[in-house]
Length: 170
Image (spheres, rainbow, N blue to C red):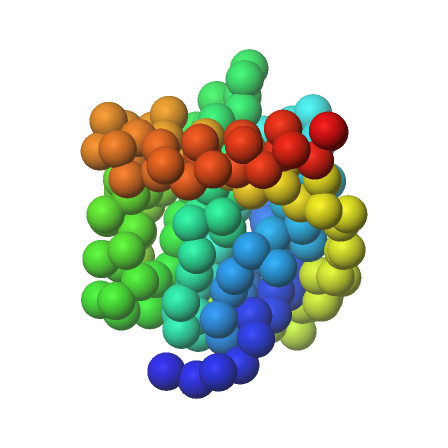
């Protein structure tokens, strides 16, 4: 495992979005990923997604909850399930633990050569503390809503974030 901070790149070809992450993907990358998904999910036509996690050392629950947005969009039905390239057992086990196999096609590898020359860095976005807490909260609520087991795992996190957010407005 490396200590390299997470980095996100993306490419778009028509209605297909390719998002690749590397390093340690933590909540600090969440605002950038969320903004990219805002852009992709605002498109009126059906979007296809391939998320490459094959170079990720670790991905936290915040970023997983943000990616769950792809399949939790009201009025959006996907003819093709989004794909997550796991790169191996560690990430795949994590994704299975949070029930991502119910919503995404998890694959160990895919030929992504047609995207490699088209990659753009996802720009960093800094949020104020209140907006960051809101993003963390929504992300974890999304994970809780996926499954009863997830609800049990993340309920305390949601409660703590709700308390922190309430204290922000005092």
